[in-house]
Length: 165
Image (cartoon, rainbow, N blue to C red; front, top):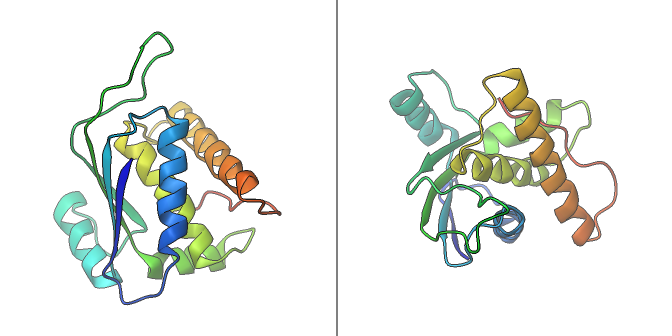
């Protein structure tokens, strides 16, 4: 799995954890190991510009996903998943910090960025949360991936509750 994490935000973030959890999420979703993903960490001003340009919504957001090859998790019948360019995930640590501070189970900015990285991966794979059933599926899968990764890393305590907008 080729994953690049590029921090352009000016804020110190745990880039290795973002890379690790994105790799874990893609492996759990059975995405081809030669697929490529880019994660970009930007400041609030850059995120706001992207949010306005692509969503026509004001203010910065927490995570945005820009799919490329529209890869999907393979079905159980598929012998091998296709490889390709997954796309880009853009994260904003300033929004992540605020969300972590305001969450019912307060957690760090880095924990929120890890959750957002998984959220972004799922969006790249075609998951959405517009409808209640879609939201239940996506957020359930998101929690399972984050919890699985945390367990593998030997992290204790509850995983961050979804704060993704």
